Amino acid sequence: MINVGVIGVGSIGKHHARIFSGLEGVRLVGIVDADLPRAEEFAQKYNCRAFKDYLKIMDHVDAVSIAVPTTFHFQVAMDFLTHNKNILVEKPITSSLEEADVLIKEAERRKLILQVGHLERFNAGVSMISSMVDKPRFIESQRLSPFLGRGTDVDVTLDLMIHDIDIILSLVKSEIADIRATGARVLTENIDVAHAWIEFENGCIAEAVTSRIANEKVRQLKVFQHNSFLNLDYQRQELTCYTKRDGSVEKETKKPEEKEPLKEELISFIECIKKGTRPTVSGHEGREALKVALKISGLVNHDLTK
Image (cartoon, rainbow, N blue to C red; front, side):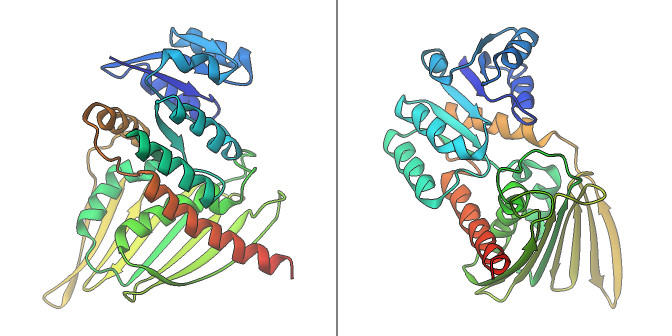
C-alpha cells in the first residue's frame, strides 16, 4: 500500500484527491491546503486527515502530488524530495530552468520519482495520434479557454500552451532551430493571448495558438505529413484521419476507448513508484517544455515593452 497526500486542493488538486481516494493499492492519508476549512471539506469527503502546513504530512506519506500555484512548486517539491518522498508536480515543473535543474538533480541523486503533470500525454487520442505520426511536416495546435480567473499568476504560455509544447516536442523529436512569437496582455498583468511559430532542424514547423479569453473552449491538434492529415480533438478524444490512397483521399474517424487522462496519469505515477521506472513525463521532459514556454514568453514580453 502506497500512502499518498495531495498538496493543494484547488481546481486541479481536488481531482487528484478524488482519484487517489479510489485507486487500488493507494491510501490517501492527507490533504493539505492553506485554506484549512477547504482541506477539511475534502478530507471529510475522502475519509483522510486535513493539514494547513504541508510539512506536517511529511512523516505520513510515501508520495505526494503537488498542485499549488507555480511560484511555490520549487520550494514544496524540494522539501518533499529532501525527505525522500516521490513527487508528481503539476505543470509547469517550476518557474525557472535553474529551479527545474535543482529538482531533477535532487530526484536523481536520491533515486526518487519526479513526474510532471502534463496530463495530455495520457489522453487516449494523443496515444493514438503518436503511433500514427511519421516525419511530420507541419503541426498546428489550438488551446483556447474562456476567462476563468485561475492560473493567471503566470503567462498563458506556462498555463496552457505548455501542454501543446510538450506534445509537439514528443512528436517531432528534433532540435529547435528558431522560435518566433507574438501575444498580448488583455485582462491580467501577464500574457493572456500568445501565438508561437517553432521551426525544427529537421524541417518541421509547428504553430501554437493559445488564449485564455476566448468565447469557447477549444483543444485541437493537427498534424500534416506525407500523404496524410491527422486532426485530433483533445476534448472528445477523437481522431480524424485523411489519407491519400490511389489518387483519392479517404476519411476515417477513430475514437479509442475514452479514459480520464488525469486518472491514467496518476495510475502511471503509482506504477513508476512500484517498479522504479522512468515517468512518461519526467523532470527532463518537463524542463524541455518549460524552456520553450519561457522562450516564447520572453519574446512576447520583449515586444510588449518596446
